[in-house]
Image 1 (tube, rainbow, N blue to C red):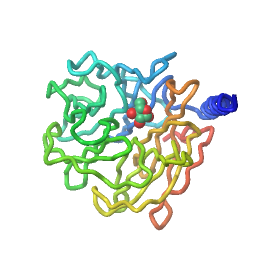
Image 2: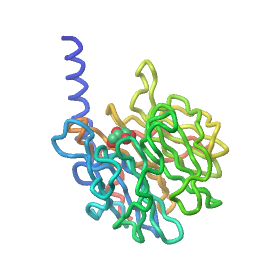
Image 3: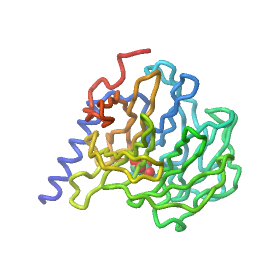
Image 4: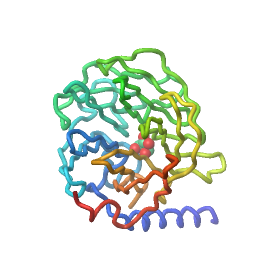
Length: 299
Ligand code: FUB
């Protein structure tokens, strides 16, 4: 009985917190990976299904904005129908641009694939006819890809759940350069994101502890290389939900955190955003959720 009470309280809190925020994208999207190309912000999110009772998503949309307020929905850019090797769980994707081509990295049924296009909004095509990273080959769950392009042009593909992994990609962006490497990241659960600030590598993620105290909060660490070691810097955001996934992008000299909140249900999530600030020592200032988020500051 007590257990049901706390589950009920948790569900009510989720819903009220979710509605306190102003989502930037229409219902329901989640896991927003933001990329900035030619002054335009592109978001590649998961596409939650209204009324669903699991994360059984089947396709992905993408969105773009030149002013961070008005977002264009480019419709379905890729889906499980476009591949022959998976038929469930179209989860958190990411995207990259290199040499005029766009690469869409997506998990499907716990494997990661890559699709290629001449445009950021597709159509994307699967050039491999199979996963880039297969289930069971890396000692972690093959979900939540984050593609990081370093200043020297080297591409790193991060992924995993509870046990983070990274693999370098070749310049073609669709094949692997060398073996998958395990990473040491304190309190790591899932949703890894890597970005660079002032020459340092920031790894941020949905945190997890055995006590549950930090579960579902955004934490980060800072390192000197893409492989770490990453010095743990703690939690920088609490989205008031059991589940969180985010990205961080620099847009015209300002840094923005894109994330989702759960609600009305665990499987119906909404994408929100807040400005992110660094202190002079490079640490990220704690980000409170605000009702407005980045809205109201049109560029
Ligand atoms: O969207 C499905 C899963 O939920 C993602 O893979 C996780 O990061 C979590 O957001």
